[in-house]
Length: 82
Image (cartoon, rainbow, N blue to C red; front, side, top):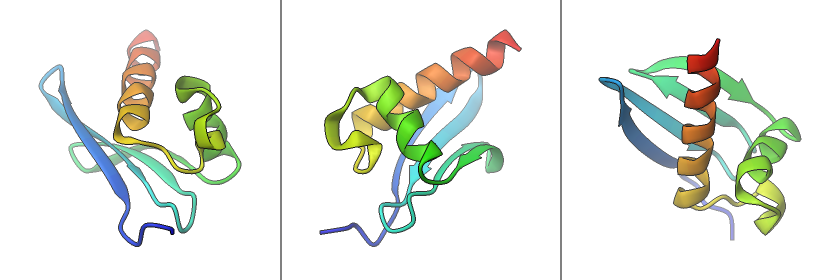
């Protein structure tokens, strides 16, 4: 059964509040910093982004909180490198 509410995880990184939000209904994946959109993906890109850090579990279409935390860590590392 699909979740009606988006799955959301939040982390405090370098004094900022960073969140990853995923909607199983639409497949939209969004990263926000203090409420501002940093990155946004839609299927199949959102599924690939999740699967790339979480492995092939559910093929990125039903991430766990741990999967979204792994995505947050990965994306924050990439953003700092820019």
